[in-house]
Length: 331
Image 1 (cartoon, one colour):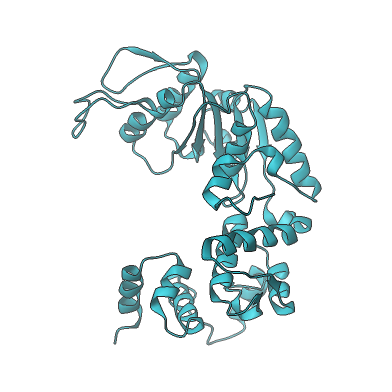
Image 2 (image 1 turned 60 degrees about the vertical axis):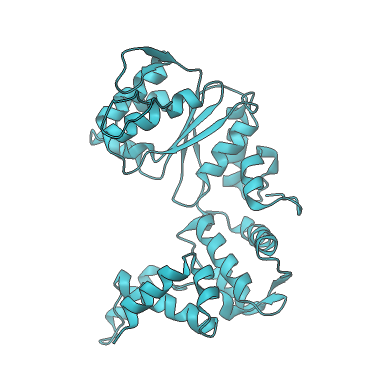
């Protein structure tokens, strides 16, 4: 992605268009070509891709490249909400509709009028929520929770999921008729491991963004760091790449990122790692708690015990780090 050196990362995300995307990989080029076609229509869009591939960024870029660009972009995550909360968040509620509803509130559909509503993790919606979304898409109308008054909104819907919707439909976990309504155009974002020709430019972009954020002047990576970055399979995709590069920039003392600054927990393939573990009677505990403990210990060692810098690299508060240290290392 092309970036302006005078614009921070949040501004880049909120202001990006499809013209800001570049790719040297055929799969991603096809994805971008389809996204440009979709941006010229008002059809609903379904974006599919693994966690961390940039589905939200793609949705915003499509909105900013469309005729609705002057309208609002409202983002909503549908995961892990009860039916009542989801109903209220999407369609709004009236005062007294439920305990704690002290005033009338507009929902995401109303707020997105004349703009775009992006619903992430749409496959996590309950059957009841799915039926209400279907009605809103079919007729452009809905009611606030606790009201019988019909509300109307002109909304372009973009939805996204990392889950296998086709399988969910076959297992009756997701409505087939809703899928057809959501899927005016389907865009599949390839995983980072399927974009090897883009990795070099993506790393360079992340370093430049991290330089701006951290007020550093990193100019490149050494041979060992390069080997680690290009041999890794990136299961967390762009989100994981962002975390690794930000940590590397923070840790590095000079202008070049060295291999030891690339904090990747697993460089081997999952099958290789498992084979090594099975063949070793004393292999390490692979529980989530144990892996978190080793990662925190590794960051602390890299930062020579500096808790403030370690907490920043880990993406947690100093208080949270102290709590985890007390939990893991006491006694």
